[in-house]
Length: 273
Image (cartoon, rainbow, N blue to C red; front, side, top):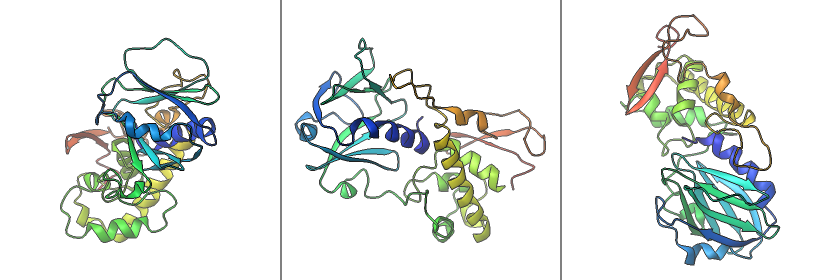
C-alpha cells in the first residue's frame, strides 16, 4: 500500500509535468472508485493553469485558480507519466491529458483510490479537515505525540498510525521507527515517556525522509512511466518490516511478528521494550 513517502515521490514526479501546464482532457474509463468520479466537478480543472502540486497526508493536491482536486492512491493505485500513449490495460481507470500531450494515467486494481474535487478551500474538505499534523519539518512532533498520548491505552503503534494524531506514519514506517527508537509496538501509548516520544519523533522523520530520498518502499520501478525514474529502493534498508524470523541487525536475535489492530507488526523483543 502506498504510504507517505510513496505519495511524496509520486507528487514530485508529477510536479514537473503538471505545474505550469494545463489539463486539456480528462478521459474516464471507470467511474467506480472509492467515491464515484464526478466529471461535472472535476472538469473545473480543464484549461486552467496548474498553479502547484502539494501533498496533505496521503492526498496529492492539484491546485488551480478555480480550486483543488485531490488524488488518493488507495491500497493499490499508481500514477503513470506517459509521453507516448500505450495500450489501455484493464485497471487503467482515467487519464489526465496536458496541453503538451503528456498523459497522466491512474491505475488501480482494487479501486480504493479516489479523484475528487475539493473546491477553493481544500483544507475544509471532509477528507482533509480532521487530519493530524504533518510529521516532516515539524520540530514540535515529539511534544505533540506526548501531549496527546495521555490517557490513551491503545498500543503506541496504533497510536502513531492514527491519522487524526499525525499523518503519514503507515504500517511499514511505524514498525521501522519504533525499532530505531527502541520502543515495543505493543507498549501502551500513555506508557511512553516524553523523552522516548522525542526520540520516536526523530526516528519517524528520519525514516520518512530517507525513504523519500530512496524512492519509497512499495512503489515498483516506473514501469508505468516514460521518464525512467527508479523507485522503491528503501525496501533494501528495512530493519524489521517483513523480516519475521530473520536476524536483528543490532543483536542478531530473531525478528518477531505479531498482529496489532489487524496489521502485521515486526519487532525485536530484545532491542525494543
